[in-house]
Length: 160
Image (cartoon, rainbow, N blue to C red; front, side):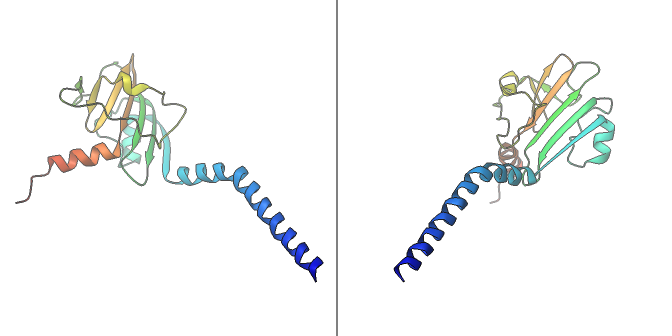
């Protein structure tokens, strides 16, 4: 009887070790998969094509923008956008500088190779609720969901 108990105990311990090793090996991949499930990414040839395909695309994006890349969170208002602007100027309706506004951070939950690290330090203006950086004719824009929600709350009239 004593031999059976020790064999069962060894089997349980071995199974536990196998599960632990699998969790360490597979855990990060599962986390990446889970996080990625709540993101949508798309590429478009033009701004007009992007706006026709996706309601969440900002209306300030010029129709003649090219090489549009977009990543959004499906569980909030976090967004990343990259586009080539033919004239190398901020779109109409955008403002240069950040008067009275602090640059909001690039959403940490969105990472993609076409959006450079540290771009928030180069913010040169705002377009709607997006902060933007323009380098030559390359526009980088990001929207932090928490900042958007705070701005929307501030815009609503206070209830008495």
